[in-house]
Image 1 (spheres, one colour):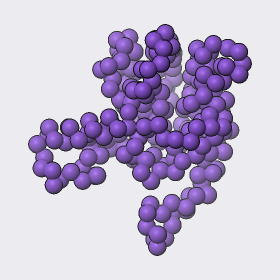
Image 2 (tube, helix red, strand yellow; image 1 turned 90 degrees about the horizontal axis):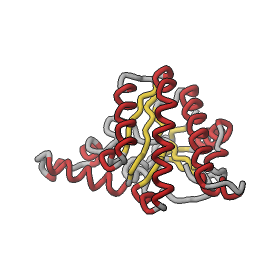
Image 3 (tube, one colour; image 1 turned 45 degrees about the vertical axis):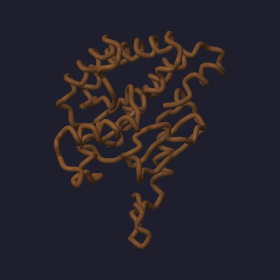
Image 4 (cartoon, helix red, strand yellow; image 1 turned 60 degrees about the horizontal axis):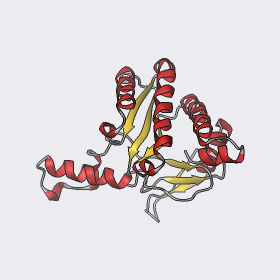
Length: 226
């Protein structure tokens, strides 16, 4: 979800207003994905690299997160959305951590959609963490296959992403789900995140639907999207 700061800048607004507008875009996209029957949605919310931002902005982001989750939790429960966190939850500010733990507990039984918030997340760190956990389990190195290692990722038991959307004109992966996106399709748009609407989502899905996915097998029958 990229472009909040630039969205605010072009409107001569403080960056905080861009982040605030970004939460409204997130709500609309969650609701639209749910309506479309999309079972898993991951929002890249705060990377480990984002700690390098000014301390005042970081504090605002987590205060905004607490307010947003508190406000939206009743609706998430009603809609059947289960919230999960990808990242090191223990390192987050106390209020944010407790709010997120409460939300995960309250939505644990929901089964309409899984909403992953990638918070304090790093794709490289996730892979290193999975390797450490695998070794600590006592399993022999010979058993360390990609399938086995996947059981130690934050996304254990979830399917790999079919589609990764990046807003604001940037065309890089930025340490996002490096293991899981090996065969994902990518969609880049110049639209800044606060302006990314359900209509924008449909454009991305339409572009995805006409792609042929071979998963590396050149002479296999291609999987065509409906």
